[in-house]
Amino acid sequence: MPLTDSACRAAKAETAAKKLSDGGGLYLYIPPSGSKAWRMNYRFGGKQKTLSFGTYPRVTLADARALRENAKRALADGVDPFAIKGKTATGAHDSFEAIAREWHAGQESSWVPAHAERVLSRFVRDVFPDLGERSVASIAAPEILEVLRKVEARGALDVTKRLRQSMGAVFRYAIATSRATRDPVADLRGALKPNPKPVHMASLKANEIGEFLGKLNSYDGERQTALSIEFIMHTIVRTNELRFGLWTEVDGDLWRIPAERMKAGRDHLVPLTKQSKRLLAELKKIAGGSEWIVPGARGDKPISQNTMIFALYRLGYHSRLTVHGLRGTFSTIANESGLWSADSIEWALAHSSGNKVRSSYNHAAYLDERRRLMAWWSDYLTTKNPNDLSALLD
Image 1: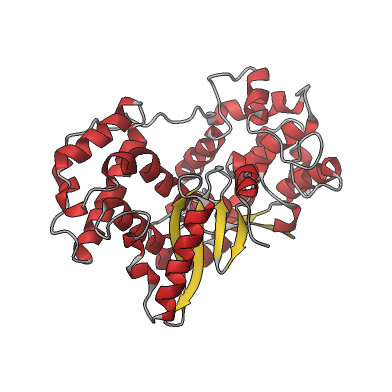
Image 2 (image 1 turned 90 degrees about the vertical axis):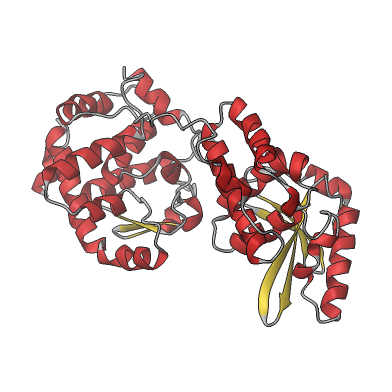
């Protein structure tokens, strides 16, 4: 059924990305962030491809349909509409916006949806208003610096750095496609403020784990919250990886977290020890029929983002410990033990190697060692836990 403008306006984001189809391959893509973008799927040369027509409501429903018809006419003429897209609503074929969207569409299939949306939204918010209609070959380094200085002035230094990297990639793509001769972003080296030194999340020292677990055992808030924190200690997953976890992802002694929920953009296998399975069993009793491992009060949504950190505050760890810092505790103790390879520890933390082929190999190669590593870690925590020593006797 074709879309209406009122349906486009009323559409709301959900926890998973969704698509509202208008027919003919055109759809409105709505990721969890809430932005709305027009896209069109089509086939050319035996390959599935996707066009991006811009964001709604900047590009209206009528505009998107007109762009779809242009693309369909190009296909009927045996022309890939990707090659002429820049001559439509986004301006000239050599405009920065046209080339940036073309580059983004080419990269999108290799990115997780959330990352693809972040990259495009930075362009839409911070670059296209000033440089989008300009010929890419006419843009000079001082103009790029002016755009980046505005982002820098917001205090968003990390965004500034990432935006500079993305703009550089667009210029290099323009060079490769004969629409520019050099990358002016390269001239900005040293012109921007450096990122501040990273602040490591507050974590526990080895001699503080026992006291913390004792307090956690006596937590006077929701039992599910205390179990969630302890489960994270045993599995060293990130908060949101557990918050949005589903029971269907758990299979025996493995929990497979899908790529779209992982920072590294790939499936992550979490070996479940006897201790973590005990915690899961108790969480299952509390969850009842909910699909979520740690549901909120009504059961139809996961617990809120701040539930676990507020529990740490109630336990007296404000400014002394974060949930993410528990991963740092594991990393320090595991590395200092000398028992485990650095790679297996990094894979347990779901850190990316940056090499897809090597990553695929290591995913399997280190699973056996990670099973042993996680069993060792769970036993280590158990020896520190005054209420759980019996687990070692099983």
